[in-house]
Amino acid sequence: MKSRYDLPCNIAQSLNIIGDRWTLLIIHEIFIGHTLFSEIKNGLTGISSNLLADRLKYLEEEGLIQSELYSRHPPRYRYTLTKSGEDLEHVFNALILWGHDHLEKCYKKLIDPKTGAEVEIGYYRKDTGERVEKVEPVPLEHGVNEKQ
Image (cartoon, rainbow, N blue to C red; front, side, top):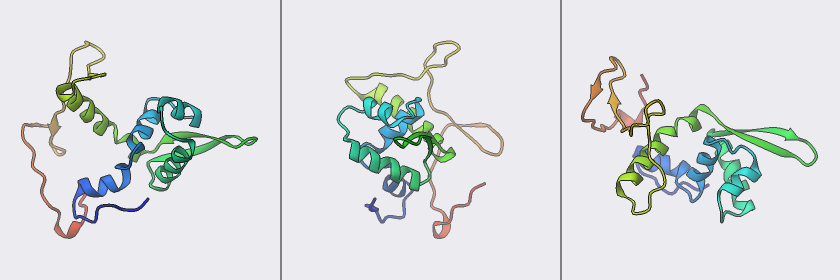
């Protein structure tokens, strides 16, 4: 896929990978357990087979999914998320919460499965685990990722 955004911004660079039409929905289908091409296609009414095949190939190239051949004749693949793809769970949850609060037609909410109580997103310090009430994005020097 062609990079659409040449901006020094995490959001822009992430959208270069996951911002194309259908891409997040394909990842979500795999996330919820639809790992075969036919299952993914059936879950996404309106996507063409060619577009789905192209997106799956691209997502594998970008390291968000991996494929495993499970039938040689005809060749068929099972798709699973990599760690990078699994880490999008937080993005999906944030979109569910946003949709619950702002969409006229809402289809899901997030709950604690033990109690059924609704939940919200929280931020915590990586070094202490202490809850943080407000966060602020700050630029990295020279665009270098300083992972801790």
